[in-house]
Amino acid sequence: MRGLILFFILFMMSGLSGLASANESKEQATKQQTETGITAVIEVKQTIETGLQSFLERALTEAEGFGANTVVLKINTFGGRLDAAIAIGELIRSSPLRTIAYIEGKAISAGSYIALNADEIYMERGSTIGAAAVVDGSGTQIQDSKVVSMWVSEMRSAAEATGRNPDVAQGMVDESFVVEMSEINRTKQAGEILTLTSKEAVLIGFAEAETESFDDWLASLKPNRVENIEPTLAEQLARFLTNPAVTTILFILGISGIFIELFVPGFGVPGIIGISAFGLYFLGNYVAGFAGTEHIVLFVAGVVLLLLELFIPSFGILGILGIAALMSGVVLAAYDTGNAFQSLGIAFLVAIVIIVIFVRLFKHRGVWNRFILKDSLNTQEGYLSHEIKQELIGKQGQAITPLRPAGTILIGGKRIDVVTNGEFISAGSWVEVIQLEGIRVVVQQTQPSSEAENK
Image 1 (cartoon, helix red, strand yellow):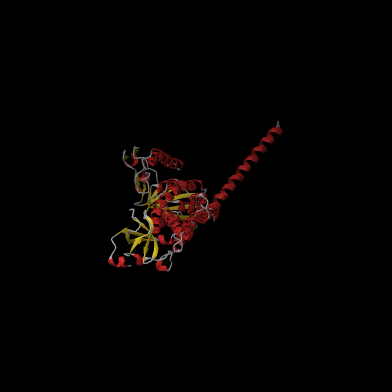
Image 2 (image 1 turned 90 degrees about the vertical axis):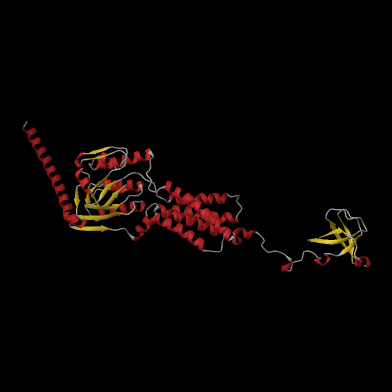
């Protein structure tokens, strides 16, 4: 019995010792993290698109790599692409670091969703958050129930995950949803899209505090070191080149330039512009992490097949394969294949108009002229296909055979094969040459002049 009690006491002491050791390790880790006190500041400004997503992915990895324990997202944006925002939200949620969204001016639309995914939100006085209705590229609100429902779910999930009121998040998207906010004595009515001021956001618990300036607020965190992570020049270029509007323009220039060079060769400039446009497109998507070498190879193979189609008879097979390879390379290199197809379709329509106009203006230099004999074998160039008989016009002669309508006449002692305009002229009748059509001598019946009778 005493042995059992002694064993139990030793077991408890061992467990307490292990627990103390674990607590001590955790305290040491916490102390080390606090002493490190590195805060990384990342700006989230302008339009939210796939290039920003790529930059933030790199920035968060870099912050974790140099030992930061806090990441501050300095937000001032009117929103952008929902797919990019959702991906960015996932990056923020999955980060092991403490994430803070500091709204410097506007966190509108997709910007509000990014802020909601942060652990904490601080708002500069006069800033706003909300107005997250789904709109298209022209700013028109999308009424598709499936799209709205999806975005409502994303906003509510982001709010719930960070302990904020999901009804308020839904009110920022769904205009039919009614939200009671007793803390600020306000009701968001049906037909409205909710936007909160910095003061309102703090009062309803959507933000931790209202601040006067970013520098003063950052100083209040008492970081040992602040690291500003800036986008590289390549990342800035990638953000610009992966913008949907810029992508469409690059497609128009690329398609127009390449096909103009194929159909009207010799200029060089359209071909250079076309290749450069597609080169910039692939560069932007490659830096952003969406395009790979295989996509570029597929595109180049498509261009080569189109060139071969011009010189090797294949009944269109090489051309079809070339277009398929070219389009596949371009579309697969994009972040969103659906948007890439849409931009490519618009670009094809515009490019066709440009190509037709250009080919009409310079049709004399078209590629088809390589397969057509352009030299004219005419009299002016010194080519004679038959004896010139211009001097016979107006001459009179006598038919020595019936003209039915072809026959032979005698002019000045020379036999000449002639035709009539269809009428029958008997042998011995007098005729006059009225027309020359190549080697054809056309005559009509006439009365002999005194000069012809004397001959």
